[in-house]
Length: 384
Image 1 (cartoon, rainbow, N blue to C red):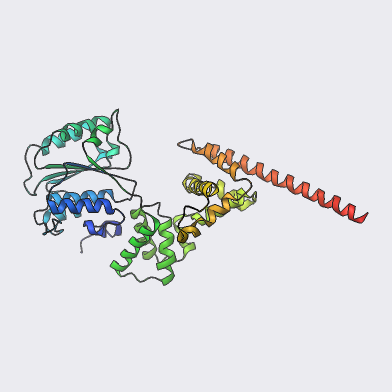
Image 2 (image 1 turned 60 degrees about the vertical axis):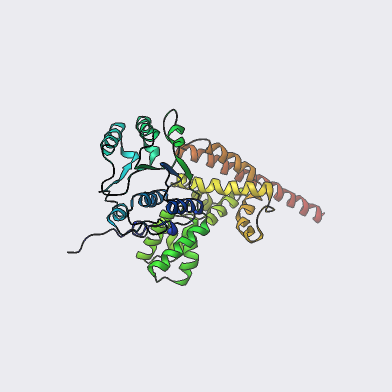
């Protein structure tokens, strides 16, 4: 029987070298400079949102330090037992992996004590990859403060975090690190990344999917390379190449669809379909997208497109439509109130939005009634 393997592309096809990393040019240049100089920072922190590539960079950095068979440019070989232990995540050598969301202060203390007893035996140095550092308790962070305070030859730390660290003084550990803020990728960069996967894996897909389909996935991947490649894999494996099928499969309401709903609301066109769309059970998932569109519309209302490159002005078509509605300012106010809560309860969301939709519908009916009345009076005068 053949050996079981992971099929997930985000694992199998994850970048193994700095040159394969997309959208983080500044960090990649720093890594390549350090590889060439063979002089590495004692403690490093990669900070960024889900799917931005923090752990990938941490693994490349760790291999650069630990690999004994680096090439003339200092790049890890990706073939030796050291590199394979990192790439395959077996962690059975001198590169140690710790998950900050799953470790107590006592566990951290025990591991550090054990690992500091001897220098690296199998690899060039001991490297601690501490993933999801934002999940560490203040007490656990204190343990790392002690470990990173005094440089110890042959020991290196690589931290990753999605957000600020916990504790009274979260900046203390960060101050001991070279901190790199991950750049949030643009849709175009994610699209190019997906294109590189298509070429690398020689995927056979309909031409329209390779253009509109990949673009749609990139636009709805929440600026996450990982989520984008997961969506691409699912589409390819299940032969889901139609945009509408992609929307239904992943429960996506695209930017254009959401903007169309907000345009109707802003103009007072509150139909049953519009009401159901905005009040639906996935209101929490939609809120971020709706706020982004309203933010874009507010920017357009204030500045227009004078600051936008000519080739990019087409992207402001939908924000312009939302901003032009007679109820746009009211729309901004109600979403601003909702945005003040970290978690919006469903009842509160329904009450706020329902009241707002009812009010603007009533205003439209009132205006319509006045208009009809004027028409009646005008016809009466014409008859006389």
